[in-house]
Length: 378
Image (cartoon, rainbow, N blue to C red; front, side, top):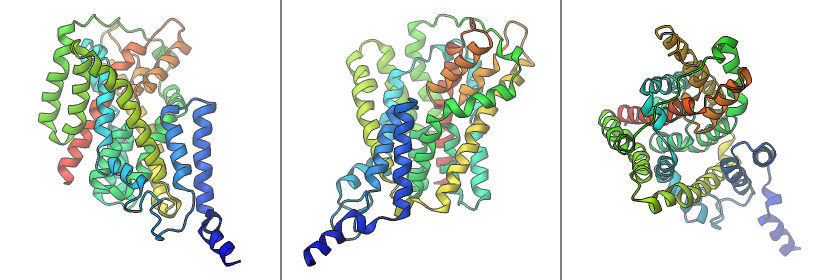
């Protein structure tokens, strides 16, 4: 009987709480959304399964080194890539090697839409301060409004490491829900006539322009905000690997093997960090609420700024406001949503190439905003 009782004492049944049950259900929901509806499966499946791993109850402080927060455990070692901000720059390297900046180079004014969508960051920051978070915590939470998971993790690892779990989960959850969140906002803020606006075909961008862009982009953005150097440096480096044409093997590795490996490690460890005993708090719920509001504000900001720009543009040069919603940096999902909504209004009006310009501008914009916040608050 003593052996049986000791066995039960060390089993998960003896330490199971309602909090573990809630988080296990959340993990299953993430997996369901990813598999059944294909909502960002490359992110939600690792995160969802990580949530399951992190919420298998065990006897804490027993020296078994199992949990992600227990020093010396395997999961804790893997989690250092999140806490030290190692994984986000590697993600940006892969994104740079996958990204074609041609649409932005051919129509630089669309950069303003990516900048306008970053209003979600500062609106969320003010909301977090109002709810009682410190300025550093509010800044880390605010980056959720940029719809950029790696940037949110990078900034929170510097300013609010205790909040990395809820911030990362909120950022990636709402990135996955872009097809659900954005379309109603887009339809509400645009008229049928505006959704049918046709934009000029982007001009052909030369190879020399593509090669020069990452070099010039790096110098311009990082001289303005050196705090964004780890992210933007790797983003533009990855893009140069792609566009130079002489480092195809490196570019291929960055956009395939490397980013896949880092995504797996990042997703599983972020998911496992939602351990019920440390994750389920009123502050976490507030972060989730702020994240939902921030996505709506960011989407609205890009759309409304496109409408303002149209007031000063001649007929034939006007911007379809639907592409303003792509200013959030959920690449390429938000650009695809602009394309889908445009096709619903006019089946012959293709907006994807145009929408990619504010979409990639949003990636740069959120990193710049993170760098500025980091410079001011450190």
